[in-house]
Image 1: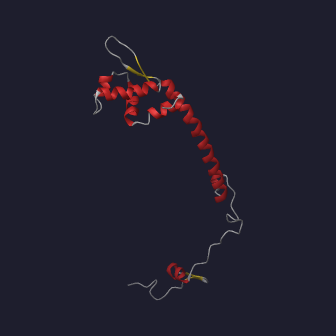
Image 2: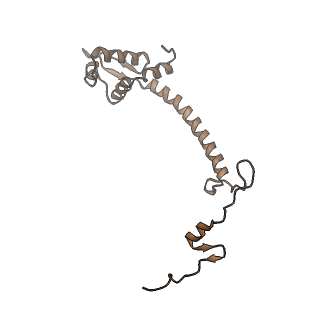
Image 3: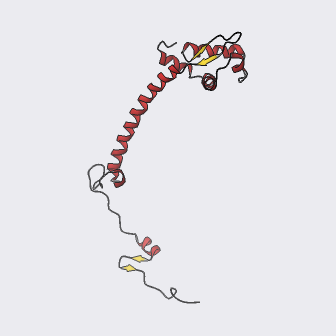
Length: 157
């Protein structure tokens, strides 16, 4: 098993049952019997899950007369959060830089980019082609101007 606290915590939380136990203990302390009622497994199986969580430093047990309630230990979760947050910030910074590059390529004025006069390889940007004859007929516009009215247009029935 992993030796550093962060690795032990991630290994312990790789199991969905253990993640659920942590979620339940984040609400309130509970004993093994109480936790076992929520799962289709024996108390011994739940105890094994709790042992893994204890070894990872995520859970501790205390003695309260005959009960041994389990407590969530937030320090290891804090360690995990700091580690995750560091890489989340780095990823967000990378995505921010990528957004800026893409905005500059698009020439999107809302994103602070300048209009792009060329294609990605430095060649002149493509111009919009004039409408094809089919498009001219469909829209009623010809190169010389709007289509002239025929006998069917403007006639009353």
